[in-house]
Length: 272
Image (cartoon, rainbow, N blue to C red; front, side, top):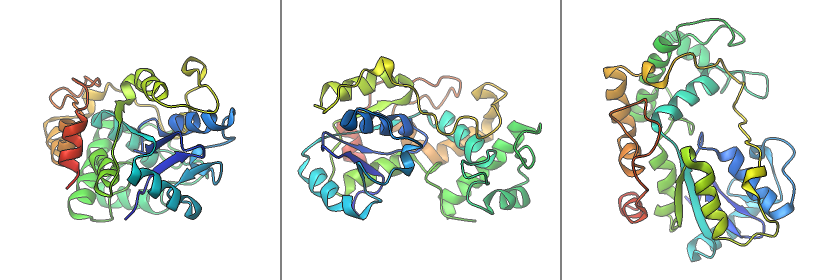
């Protein structure tokens, strides 16, 4: 199994377990900058060198040796499950991707046909009932996660606990798990614990939101998308995410965490 989704700076100053839709583009660029004094030119997910990634064959042995020996400070970042799944819907389902096409080829036509989802036409710019379509998308998400039908769950909407756990199960230990909603505070704490070839001034770092502008703008407050049934589905799908990462399940309108992540609890419950 190894350490899928794990990135490490070339200098081995820090190790990061990517959780999709949780500021990963910005974090990756900060890591890249901390080594090289410049940002990667393009989407950091496309980089093939100058930063170690598990998906690159030449990086795997180095990452594995580092993580198993806990040689470097290791961290990840999480996000409110309500806003994360909404972001996945607008970016991946309604949006045109950076290659100019729909996400995963025939996925969107399949959703339109099987679940009655609307996505704003060919270019994603026409008006449609966002709330009704999102709730149908949530049914699809539940089906992929619960029954792996009509496809396996996608990394952008599979649970954060699932992503976070692979690192632990295979011998990794987190030193910090912080919140997208308190990004500067959490990222600064990570930077305070590591030594990097180039100093990072967080106040001067732009936000690399690579998914922004892909899809239609969300027209309503978060809580409007979630009725009783949707909340029931959210609990069925993301119960561990709410519990372990201290997010408010009862109030979809409250995006802020209700407490700090208990690392001992995370390692105990996700280390099975």
